Amino acid sequence: MKIFRINLYLSITNFFKTFFHQNSFKNEKIIKRILKKTNNKKLILLTSQCRVSFLLILDYLKKFYRKKNEIIVCAYNLPEMVNIAINLNFKVIYCDLNYENGFFDINELKKKITSKTSSILLTNMFNNYDQGLQVKKLCEKKKIFLIEDNAIYFDNFSKKKGKKKYSGSLGDFSIYSFNIMKNISALYGGAVATNNKNFYNFASNEINQYNNFPRYLLLKQSFIFFILKLLSVKFLYKNIFFYIIRAAHLSRINFLLMLFYPSLKFKKIKFPNFYFTKLTNFSRSLIYLQLINLKKRLENQKLRKQNNIYYYKKFSSLDSKNIRVIKIKDFDFQNFIDFPVLVNRRADLNKYLLENGIEARVYYYKNCEKIFSKKNIKCRNANRYDQELICFPNHKKIGKKYIDYLINKILVFYKI
Image (cartoon, rainbow, N blue to C red):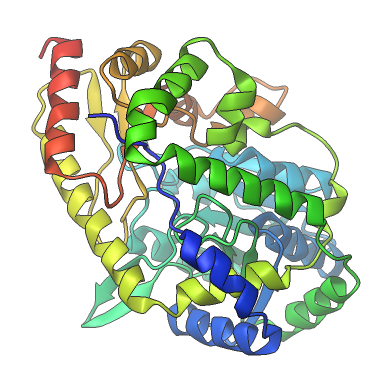
């Protein structure tokens, strides 16, 4: 059952169509109009990356709210985001997550808020809408900003009184990623949405002073895109590329692993120059071509949801202390691009699965407290997620037959 775990939502057709859709002003206007429908925001800025959106927000808070230099983040997070806050001299306050649901430990979160707290970073990762709303109300009560990271939840929604409430609609600032692995992929790209006019004016002025995005990085990412597309060709993947990927895992061939897991490239460094760059017209056109295809977006959403429901049903039925599923309340909102499961002996399981033709994702977010803090590790559940989380593929080539095969292999491995 060798199926490439990665699904690149960007098609080769759209890649080449982009060369004929270079009307930058028209494309940006339509992109913003579509985004506004999902996030309850009037003001939207396009950026070269999601992390640039985050940088602009923190730069704004640093300049206009100088007495508030603390930001609260879930310890289990993307290290690049924490690195930005640290480089801007924010004091990062780590909050642990709830082991059962993968969201903030709410009681701990409340205790972390002080008079110096500027904002909370809400990373949509495993949570449902009601959990996010709980944090929003807490921010409103404490008069602090909510920054909603919507990088991997785009198009997810919750139905409330017959209306769709989309991810990205809760934050005072909502940030998006359109990088190569996302379901709206522009190779590089991001956005920030808000109703804060002061921030909008500040960020617009900053972006206007940015340089053009380096062509060599766009060319490099385009090359990686075509390599990954080639990897996904069924015959080539089954007979050649799967064995290369397996060898990369088992022998820790880092330059190959970094191709499949960009997060492994992370280093604690100051801001690279390409952060301070504008979104290219090429990426803008890619975003436009994918956003206007609502039929395709809904189709992808539906297929992932069906797989998530089946994964959840099968894993929940397993009677084993070695396997734990994260609680899912709303399959429309918690519509994962990869299905997450917590397991014991993750490395051994991954090796066994690779030996049986199954490629899983073993590198996800990290326990950032462990990476950046010199103190004793307090966020124990974040540490457990770092060591136990494994994610299984979820895209149009995945179906019940594949999931059944995967479950059966896991049953054999854990002798259930």
